[in-house]
Length: 66
Image (cartoon, rainbow, N blue to C red; front, side, top):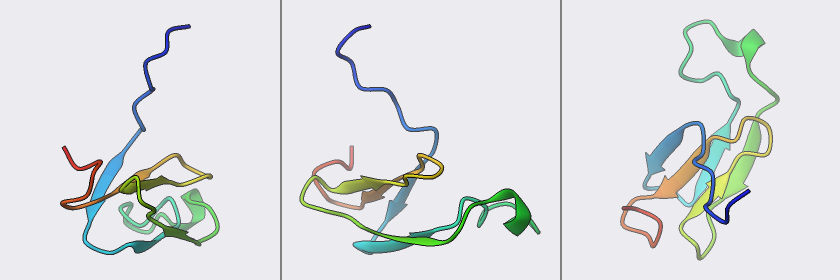
């Protein structure tokens, strides 16, 4: 396996450093399809990945926003 970083399944750009993820917020009536709501904090790298669904939250204008 190469050293290239795998892409996150979904990337969400945000202006907030603290974000909530439940895995189903974009699915109409999809709460049963998601996971427990977790609060995530974007660190100095400029992004955070959800441990449940691997959704990546990227801080707009941060070091990972490209």
